[in-house]
Length: 185
Image 1 (cartoon, rainbow, N blue to C red):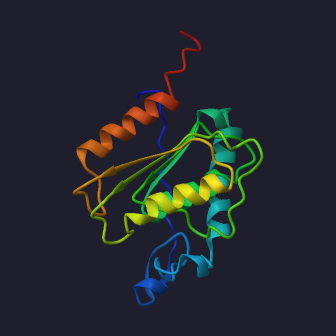
Image 2: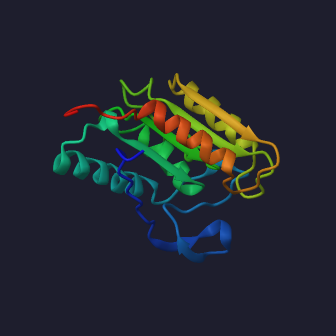
């Protein structure tokens, strides 16, 4: 995919409550994955704005349309990609969630016109960090909020990781939503 530019932002260092307050790269504070209905995700709005700003800058500086951009991430990065990607001002080509979940479900509001953004959520069934049940719950909540194209795929023996099969499924999705741009050929 030589026509694809990849930007990999890094989360800021901050304490994470779920991990005994240890300071680590984190997009927002995670209290616990078991009590999702009570989560506040302190810092998630600021992190979503940071992602939106990166996308805006890329659009303004290069002229790349949002419809040629994909948000993707692993674990908390996948969670933020889902949260931020559904609340942009423009529709993306897609959102790719790897071993993540929909954070702050009580705060998610899908921007009008983004309901048909393709979402692919890939998740290991043996994941001890983000429990497998989060895959179906995230899909259910997103669809209840209006998402219409939320696809999921699970991997029976995969823990909180990526495998060659996951990479192949990622590439297949990216090829579908970001075909080569033949402008100028």
